[in-house]
Length: 215
Image 1 (cartoon, rainbow, N blue to C red):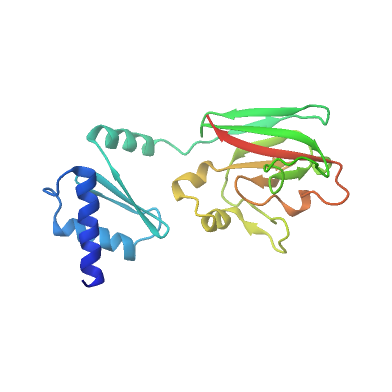
Image 2 (cartoon, rainbow, N blue to C red; image 1 turned 45 degrees about the horizontal axis):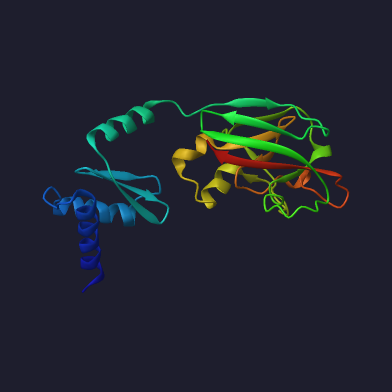
């Protein structure tokens, strides 16, 4: 069976699994999905009868959408992107600081550890900063246009927007992506290497470990 015909058949099968019937699916709908897969950019989407199809980089995401869920989704998208900014004060003697960011439903924990660390915790590594190089208070905020820094072990400054693109962070999540700054300098971004100037080295005495979780 030719590849194009097989792809059309696959689209119809996915629609059938989500809706229980192919009655409302037309040939035009199928062609729109193929166009989305081959011609559109990441973040593009189309709506079929009761089914939302979104392109996430090189993947298509199919999801069943009820009228109520569609209305709620449209209401959320009309809201402005979440903006947040939290000041964090922490001393070496403190065990940890915990910050809840309700705008993105995330909880962040900053913990001071001895360095070099003897712990086997998997969280100690790329998300660790040199405590003594930081200037307090730190600011935990959302990404802003123009944010850039030099990632650990890199020679050049890179724009965070491009780093998030390469990390396959969906476009809808980027405006509220959490970053950490020290005296105005970006030192950390979620799921990215720390800034090279603030990474631990042989002279580091204390490290600052950053962890995040949903709540």
